[in-house]
Length: 441
Ligand code: PMP
Image (tube, rainbow, N blue to C red; front, side, top):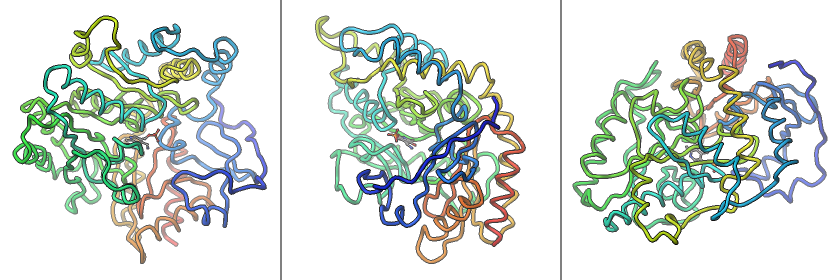
């Protein structure tokens, strides 16, 4: 699709205070408000006409590139046809069509529960896990297991199983029965190409938790197959397989949080295929609609779904749902997005570009500022040596790269990247050149 169209410009709003911004220091933002006004393909333009490569694909979500004409047209058409109808005991065809398309893309999964975000998908998956065991007469399974450094969104369940201390600090203990596996960031895995070789045995933390609490008390174990927003940590070879084995031994549901890795980022529709491990539930969002209309979902296997079929006929089988579950606009955006992925061979492009992407990132390891490079599929992080407080080097590099025309996402001192899956060699080279210039300075 053409990426050379004129990009919109805008103006700086007079009021920068009414919008309480997510995960933002308002004071720092106001000092230098970075405001995006237009987008096309892999590029953004700011209100003052500065053109940037979107190295973060929105926020790990615009997999087909920005302003895809087919997706835009589908949303416009749907808005003029059926703006909204709920799906509580009634329905509308397009949500069923979207669900069928999503599960078609996900071998082994037969059902999807629609949400409006990744955070809602995570909380929905955790609730499905609890209710699944309850339905099977195993209501004693109440413990949820997460992992250090994990990001599972910001709702109560996701924050509870999440593993980023800063996100938890203001809120105290949330869900009362959680335990965490250790993270898999090991010094011996620095600058790994391909998956890290060390750390599969860290999955045995789950066995230790079973020994300690009783495997029969654990409902679910949730991990991002490749951790993203915590700083990009690909799974050590064999790690996910080992988690699967332990879950099978103890009847624990394995949930993969694929809010980032879903919809092609690993070159396959979902990462569970790329890693060859079948979870029981998968959460997804972001790339589901190319981020155009908020939508998330939980994929469930027939085995999980069937546990809910034995209740009284007149009662809901799951006491859970959102006003906007399967929203017509989101459903239309989802179908058009899946068409765009298929017709544009976008996952195939991700698979092809994963090698050049890895080569570019690892070409930076000679720079003294670079401590570690991590990558997998079309995700990567260039982790800088700290300068003073954690985050100082990351923030400075982010600001410099913005001015140089590339957006990255600093997580502490790790510069995380997840560009649209439509990237070409030229774009990869451009990102590489700008990173090198910035980090050599
Ligand atoms: N899970 C994962 C793995 C994520 O990366 C994110 C968002 N980055 C979420 C859940 C939460 O998604 P949302 O921001 O749409 O609520």
